[in-house]
Length: 323
Ligand SMILES: Nc1nc2c(c(=O)[nH]1)N[C@H]1C(S)=C(S)[C@@H](COP(=O)(O)O)O[C@H]1N2
Ligand SMILES: [Mo]
Image 1 (cartoon, rainbow, N blue to C red):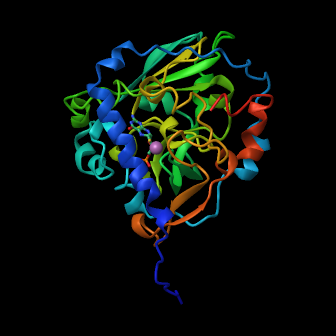
Image 2: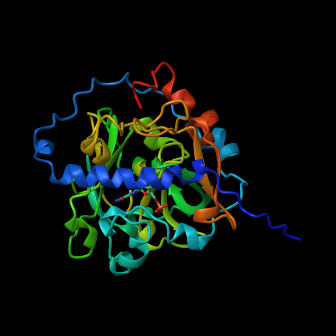
């Protein structure tokens, strides 16, 4: 028997909604500000080089899926951030239905021996989709538990034979204003761009997702191919990828481009490093019957609970500096 409790909504539970509205206000202000054009670009120094070793798949297997209560399919697919289709949480599920996901081509370029433009089927050929139940923690302060289907990004990348100059991987989302109504707003400097350090990209937890709940990925969740990096804030998990580029220098990313002081390249989930405008200590967990409004706040964990698997990649780095 299920016991229903009357939900008690603490004042803090409403915080991330206002944070989210705040984030949008900031964007709107930036979009119309002539100052934007004169903001200096990325002036950060290079971080220490990535360590040489990568963790084997077998080593990391243990922490691959959480048994926490799943977020409902209807919440995962109607409460989305996909600004190409609008900035309201309900916009993507309404507007993304028209996104054509087949045929789909991904350009793999840059520092690799075998670059090429490949169809989705070729890109994934021979790789069996695996199920991974990951926590997803948005920088806005809410989180979900999502059963993804996908293949380890590293297994895909290896096929293109990255060279020793490939220290980072840059990703780009499709940018087609005809299919993406949200692009008429300059909320982001389109196209949406993200990046990973090569060891992060090759880490066995890093997934190229093609489905969720055993079904093909809905458009609003980034069909037909999106990144999932569970120990980083959700915005690193770039959707509807059309380009993958091996690069030597840390690539510019869409959110860093917009507001470098608020969104760093690494963006590892970290309860001890607050966003300049809000705390990151807790999160509103949307799971089971606790949908949007009635979700309760729980403590946020370092690296979103994946420290055991990933913390060694950042040994010796000041995580306040490299936020
Ligand atoms: N191209 C693109 N990718 C994106 C975004 C976006 O607006 N555009 N939003 C990001 C953010 S902020 C989050 S929290 C996740 C949300 O993924 P979900 O809608 O599948 O939960 O997607 C990320 N990937
Ligand atoms: Mo997010």
